[in-house]
Length: 430
Ligand code: GAL
Image 1 (cartoon, rainbow, N blue to C red):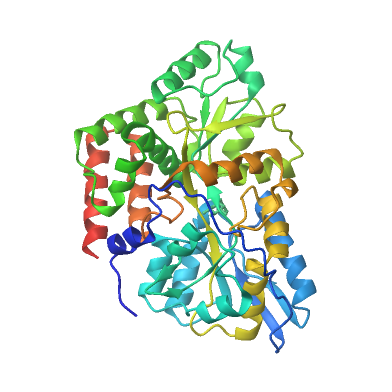
Image 2 (image 1 turned 180 degrees about the horizontal axis):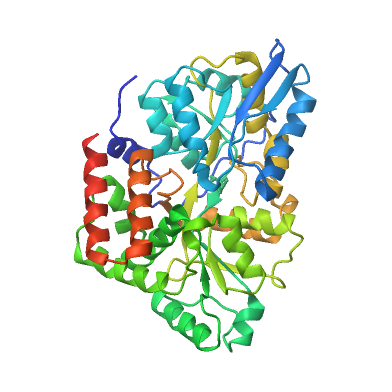
């Protein structure tokens, strides 16, 4: 296998700016299901432990129970949004040669980390056997393919650049229930909310959630093409345009809750639905959480693309892999077959807030948020997510999260930009 630099790899992913219609309507294959022979435990490693995330995992497990009845699912989940704890545990298990049978990995730059370390098996033979190649969204297939080999089975596609808002809080402050057109307009609304007594109108949580806010501002201020260039060398992190965007990010941060560093993403979402904040910016797993909480779209909450990013779908995808040295290979193959199957994707995605990675799913089976997301994925410009691994490898994600987390408490724009420049340089050098 050819070793790839992350820059080369992400460029090869080619998911940067194409409007992405899926022109493949082949409706042939359902997942073949059925166990491949064998028995025993299959440890599935994720970070999905509560709410819509757990409901999604449970959906996959129920199909696995039917189609892989000879095997026993073992839940290896480690709690913490975005894998904030899980990824470290996983890295040390891979290093000591004790991989789980399968683990959750983001398509794109993050997957390349594992591929380049020779930790994953090529699944292209299984793709042929299961008829998957024709049924997975073409752009996504590019993101998990390196030199013709395919290294994971995508379960879904998530959107990162989404703002979730409480309509009652907006109304009470005299604001319309509609997306501000730009970051500047959003800042003006934040001030109006504060004047109306909402001290921290934008609810946010620990460092990686702040990175998501930063990414959304960069997309809005630079445009999706220049934003994507931050990860393939086309855009300079030290430019004046980035400084200007960081200043806007700093202003937004001044409207956030001070207890952010100790919170996870569901805590920030709860502040919105409890009426303590007007907005949170978070991926569309929030739709899965709100469903699980029994909340209703347009009544309890509204959503829109983060201000200034309408027409851009900032994407990420959860996928499952066959690690080299997986203890139960046959059981893992059966799990992967379920993940890629029509049944598995329906049971997972209809409750997770994500949209299917398959192109043959029936949108009518999905709720109103997901139906809109399915349409946007097919027509919007695409931009990758840093915090969720589609844009770059884990080393850059960690360095940016740490810089942003420090900024959150210190607030020095020049220092933040210096750290971002250094992080990008060091990732490129690897
Ligand atoms: C992302 C993952 C999503 C969701 C989210 C919050 O990294 O792709 O599926 O789990 O973290 O935990």
